Length: 85
Ligand SMILES: [Zn+2]
Image (tube, rainbow, N blue to C red):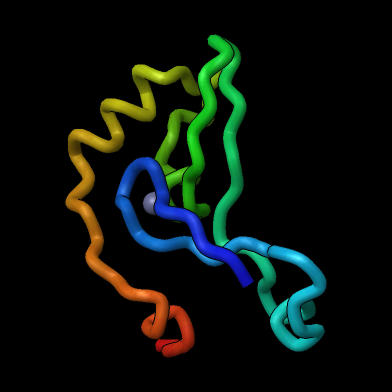
């Protein structure tokens, strides 16, 4: 498993990497993905932050920046990814 920090909340997000183990793959293999915006910029966002982007139109880099500005960074280490609630 690999992880990458979300560009908005800075949380370490688990992403599917390599073969991984089947249980995780079946349960929830990925918690974020790279967004390619209409203006050509790319951001890696967790699903939580992605849901907070505008839905009525294509999000732009400015929307991501605005979301980041009103989001407090989350401090989390890799171990906490395994605490389910
Ligand atoms: Zn995030």
